[in-house]
Length: 207
Ligand code: ADP
Ligand code: 5GP
Image 1 (spheres, rainbow, N blue to C red):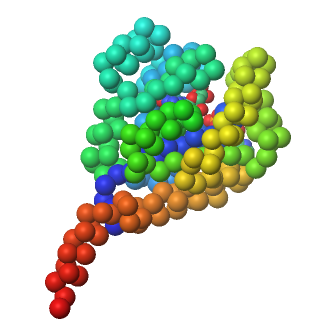
Image 2 (image 1 turned 60 degrees about the horizontal axis):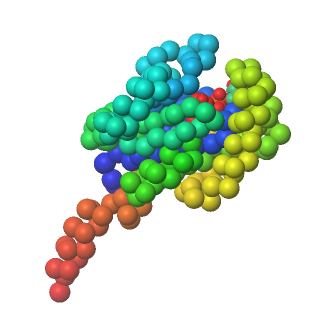
């Protein structure tokens, strides 16, 4: 089995429940490291700098880009979001699976740069439930909710680029499903090339 950590990209419509799922996954299983992104958006009530995000100014974000400190970044409904490089590399080297909870444009950049990355797309059971959750969260203005639902329509077009879909209906079941999918990814031939080439060279010795 591959001992190397895998980059796991988790995308999904705003309000699908990614943040809730990630918290539950991290508290139930200890083999994951959750990457903390940098963003130019304002903190929501209850969010802390360095916990949910590194909240930075536009100038600071542009400096991160210029210094090549991000492995991907994208603009999402008027704000920049990006993944700091250092943390991801350190955790992968320690054998952790690193989770990037990022939107579609960033996910596709990761797939290009790291073909071994596993791409998961989280959806609610229906579009109606999505709107209900987004409004129910009560953290965005009507204008922002409208922008995010519009963006969801666009993002729906990219789901086929992902390796797996995860339907977030019952939270507990969804967390376990996600864990199983990630663990199974450690057993694919393309993520075990070192082991397989050794095995093949041993087999070649048979007369
Ligand atoms: P995202 O991070 O994808 O934008 P959140 O994790 O903030 O979404 O979840 C959006 C809202 O939906 C929150 O109010 C959350 O409590 C709720 N929620 C998340 N998962 C579920 C679920 N499985 N069933 C019902 N409500 C959920
Ligand atoms: P929110 O403002 O709701 O926290 O996040 C908005 C969107 O930005 C979500 O789809 C979230 O997954 C995405 N996002 C968060 N961090 C990053 C990041 O580092 N890179 C990219 N590309 N998207 C991100």
